[in-house]
Length: 76
Image (cartoon, rainbow, N blue to C red):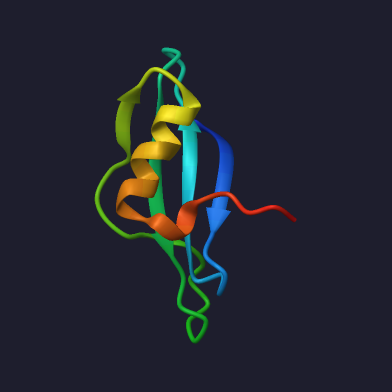
């Protein structure tokens, strides 16, 4: 079964995002994506499979932010 996306944080330009994922075993992870506006292919992973094994959603997001500081949630 696919993981469930619990949050998605885009950069200010809408060209990269981090999805926080919830897995069936109760753990969390994240994956970073990019999209190229000149192509109509949608979001593509920046790297390999999701980074997994976090006990909480907050820990997964914090790990993502260490590599992708633009993923800090913004107030609307």
